[in-house]
Length: 96
Image 1 (cartoon, rainbow, N blue to C red):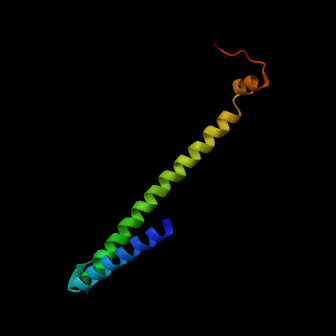
Image 2 (tube, one colour; image 1 turned 120 degrees about the vertical axis):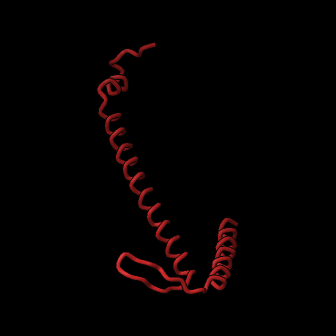
Image 3 (cartoon, rainbow, N blue to C red; image 1 turned 180 degrees about the vertical axis):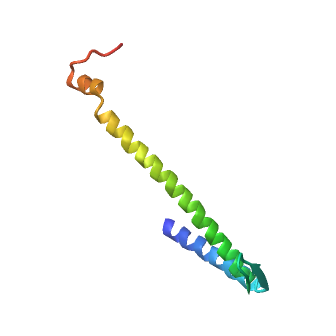
């Protein structure tokens, strides 16, 4: 059932994008650092959206990488904690 909903949402999204593309076929001038170029408005909009998604994805990947490294360090610290090892072996008294 989940696959069917994903398919329906994808289909609706594709129809919206196709309609948007047909409406925005006007040519616009894009000023780059070294020149100018004429391209359809839909390409400029889609390019901007894709570039924004790419930038957000890269930032989130850096954040995920940092958090995973921190988790690994904390797990390593928890596994090498001498007090914890003594408590597991039953040698250290529990503070109650």
